[in-house]
Image (cartoon, rainbow, N blue to C red; front, top):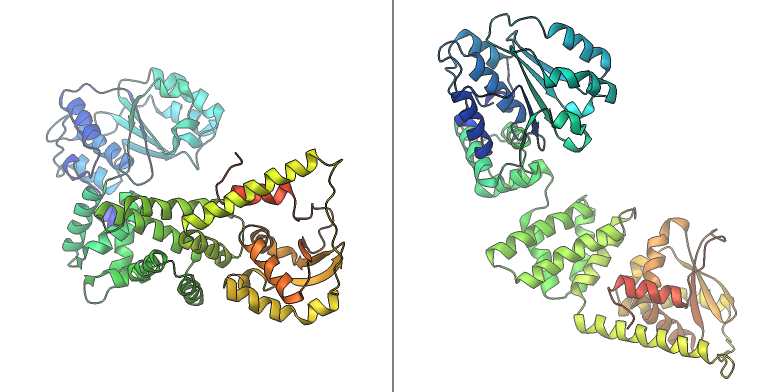
Length: 485
């Protein structure tokens, strides 16, 4: 019968535990000196060894060969039964499926019975935070004064959901994620035992993918073993199995960013989109790769931090945007835009806001000049393709932002450009700088008029229309991280 690797290589003694050396040493000392608490609380992320250590404590308490020990023999009847998971005096309870007061009452009724084979009954309550408040209250007295032959070990990934009165009755240990060094050693050992070799890049990819969970790391290794025919696990196959963006592709994009080549950047994003690579995951992988390059000195610290900051700033702002390719264009624009250009844009916006405030303050003395527009909406519709072509000559991304937009009407010297309801993100980009100014200049040049441009969402009459007012100035400043001074 096949046994999954994380069960097959579950630690059989304290020496096989990866990481958590301080916690392991403290618990070993408690077993060695027989100074055990009546209840323990193990907290920490999933797959870092909480339940494994709890079972090892059950072994150390009930070992027939060595007595109460920090070095269970693993050959006596009790040790073997605990390893196999059928020791009568080791009771594991999943609080997620046994969370009510009735289950705790049943536990309290059985708790007074003495152990069948061991020195102590060990109750491991996993995901204890899932217990109801009534169940917690029913457990309080038992935890405070359990029978001498009983040991409680509570495990949880969410200690903040546990009542303080429960925590105060336990000896608490906070587990942390397993570091890369310990994970690497464990994975290399398992791979060699299974007759496989694995390269360093794959080990790093497994660790990043598992988030520091040893159980997840071993499960991921098993996936790679299943998909490897020649017993040699290499990064190329690892990337395919895990769905990770190939490092070569990420490094190529970093080169494009360093050269500020927007045209190549757009082609690159189109290519990974066509190859069904998740754009959002690609940029998260890019952030991780930038972190690695900072640590190895392959990229300047300020540049690497800029890439990471930009990626998570844009992904956070446009988290609910469905068209992730457009979000990718925004990140590309931010990463390839020269700082001097952005500073000039912000200065212009600040000047404009100040000028508008002055106009308002002198409203009685000065009125805004109205310009008569001679071009008609039919003429603009006929020249719309030309407008888009000219705009794309200025910036390729206009082709993406205006792909669903169309000229709707001319009203009060404003050309109304309408977007479908599902293109709110594209409209937001068009009212931000430098897109707004560039497109306005293109429209005026092509139409040979002093017309202005206003953007609207289709059938959104109750929403505030976006135009040339203080609101979009604020949006521009927010987008580029500036401020009015």
